Length: 155
Image (tube, rainbow, N blue to C red; front, side, top):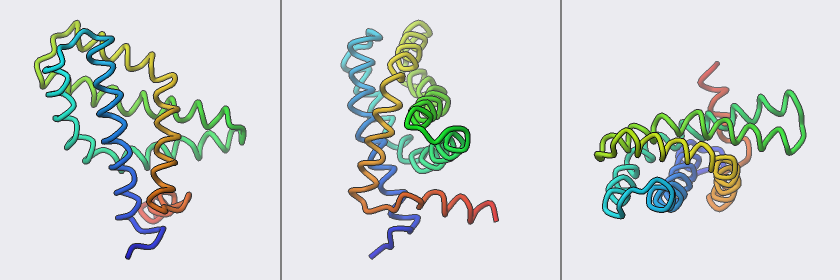
């Protein structure tokens, strides 16, 4: 139905990956590391679904840009790992803080959760990058799909 370069297929893969990953990992962080109640965390995770639907594809494009820039500097796997980490932390942390604030987390809980998220992102951002790449393969999105879309927007 959609070609491997289609925007719809690329967006669907990015949305699926972020909603699933964020729900599972976010709940674990909120409950086990930041001291939020299960109820607060569930509210946060449910609120994060529409937010993640809105930001997933832009984040995918943002991440792809970071990776392309890192590949210019160094074509090693380490450069991609660092790019995944930086993209994840710089894009997701502000969004996450707003979600926590909107569900009633206090300042200390927000700082603890966002800080924990940033620290855990040493692994999370990279793990999410691999998960996103896996989901893109499942959705049969070509490796350059977001690059093509970005180049069309810039033209």
